[in-house]
Length: 141
Image 1 (cartoon, rainbow, N blue to C red):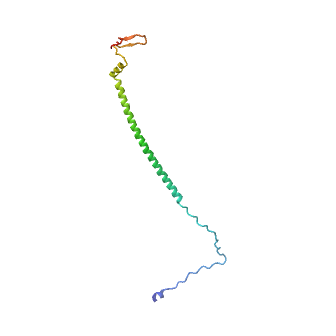
Image 2 (tube, rainbow, N blue to C red):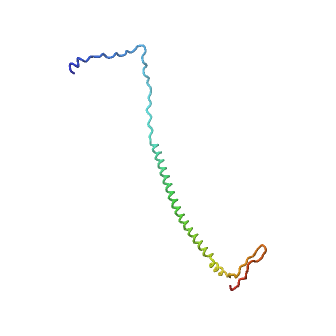
Image 3 (cartoon, helix red, strand yellow):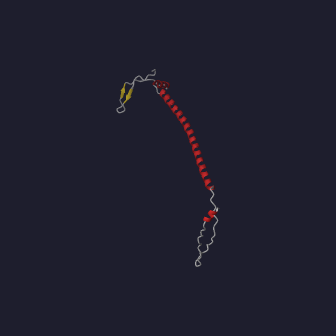
């Protein structure tokens, strides 16, 4: 320091310290037993539970997807069978219509030994009368 600054420096007196009073003294701090800190819980059970939930969700999604795919194949097979059965029904209906035609019926009747009639007649059941002009069928037709 320079001489000027040393001359200017003035000493300030230190603040007086409080003197203890002799009548009342502060009680000594009481000692107590401090417990050891508890061990922090591990996160392993929580992580295992989360992994189990995730694995269960993935497994259920896989099973659901597999069952839906199996159902789709079953639906496809049933649809094909339904189409085949519809085609069979149409074929049988066409065959029945063909056999019900007048020419097929006449041929089937002739094969059974039936002969065509020459006239047509009806019976009235209420009074037992015969209507129309019935003629007996001849053996030669």
